[in-house]
Image (tube, rainbow, N blue to C red; front, side):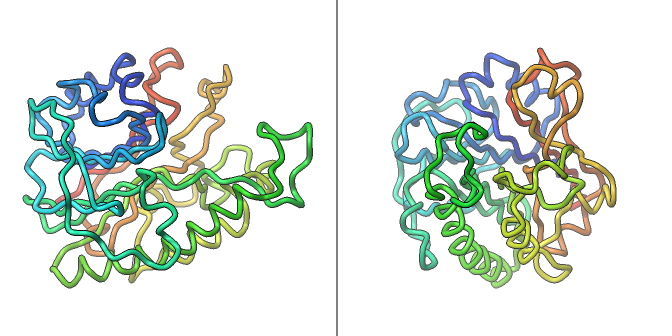
Length: 304
């Protein structure tokens, strides 16, 4: 079973840049999407071909939006908001359906309508698949230096918001993992976590210790999720102790060509599923002008 995760940075832009061709060539069984960035009515008709499309659009215009493509109709769909777009191949309706509401962990309510999380139970394998778009965040106030930041200093507001999300999501993830196990299912959390875990996940890691996405506390949080008994970083297991494979590169000219990237897109699988992975990697485009997004798809083949 070929499973991919891909932050497409806008479905309409990704379609123009070759997303449909990639989907046809690689033939994944499941794709977790992040930053679809479109209300349901604006998702291009036919862009997902033969796939069933489950989508949590969120309420922030032009931002976020997470979805999951499956070859077969999902056995169940769950979102934090309690609604989702569920389309079969060839449909182009924009009607949201009401789902059984997932009890949210303390602290998640403020994020529930932002289009950051969706999970489905696969009908053709005992797996619950989740797609997550984690907030990018910022740096704490004491690290904010006017004139040396891309964004205006905010006194640590974005940093504090991300840390609240991390705290709440860890509790929610534990619930999802236990719920999947109770149903005899493995759990596969995929998506853009906006955190690089180790020095091998950032090309210029020495200069990034005070940058959002590589702060010690963010990396420690990711550490806390991973263990041989809980969740396994599948791609890193296949590439131990080496740089990359990166999954995000800045649009700054030359960053992609020089492979100055970050690995922030993950397959985090429960141990039973992780053991079945037979191939893993990143579908890095051959040239800068061929890029579909500022991210690349991360693809794993599971022998299920």
